[in-house]
Length: 448
Image (cartoon, rainbow, N blue to C red; front, top):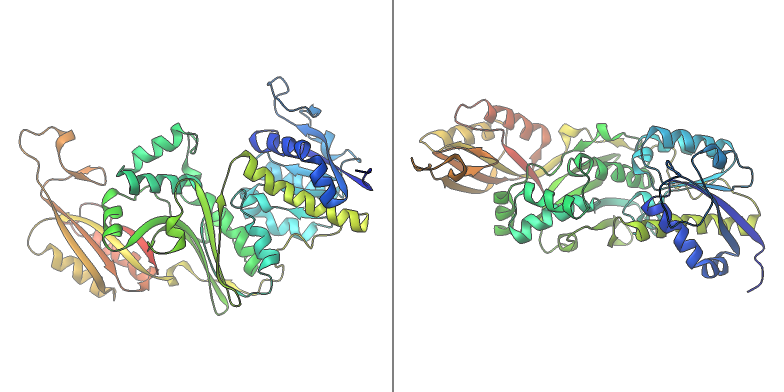
């Protein structure tokens, strides 16, 4: 193979699992990538926090980020360090220096994507920020660009999906499944970002920015996690042909976009219902294509590095043709917002509700009266008595639900017809006010 016409020099900030994989793949597949781009991609330097830490990486390393940001020979800065505000400052500096910028940082983009888009005069690549090795960003930007996107539904967090899979397949409770996820390295010691839904929310907002131009922050959309999902909820779902997944959902309704992340009961015949373990999948409904589903590894060194390098290859190809770093057609965000966000309280759905209440006469009538007062009609109803504990039982032997030891109570499980978020939240407040209701009712939305 002859010498390529150009070289593209990159600096990588963060040589962890993904950064090391990027270096390894670029070196291992150097000839293949060069042949496909007409440009040789060369890693000139990596930035690490601790130079004394042993690494297999063979590139020159520094602990001074300025040696990448202000090195005039470096064309592209790749940010793989994590965090939110410091990476944002790094991104701004790189763009101000006329460098292209590639990132896998969904948290930073969830809050600062439009500020970066407004200042970018060089390419910004972020394929790796959503669903690891799945090329969903490119699918929305290019493959589906002729379509009006009607809906996006995604299993966007592998940790939560693994926990829900273990609960469904092995009958574990949430705490057991979370502990196993941590033991296997799927969940962090502090797993809140994953199990509370905010990792998925970051990713949903990036997808919605490409599809609709939505500029919301995570705090502005409906976000709920999976920590309240219990085995009886899984059993109810199975009995009525559903499974439970943490979904990120975007839907177009006229000039409004509905955005939400929460545990969801979905029909077990749907393609997303078959996505188990740590895998991710995204369903996109276009007005021309109908539904298309993208499935694959949502995290891990090599899958995420593959997406990072796909951005580098796109930059290199443009660089080969134009002999310069062209401004950000590859960014892909719609910068003139055409849609507003549907207010949380106006979102409509069917709901599953779990209520723990005293098992005595008149309680059910009070519960149904509160639902009726809020114009909520019931489609499916189950009541399962909770057996009182024997007098010689220890606390650990007492029958429990939701982690509470409650003798002489009943589990009331029901599903509603479609109603609004405002109505269901008002009903929950009314139910909580009843002395006979032992804890705050748990809801799971149902997506047909």
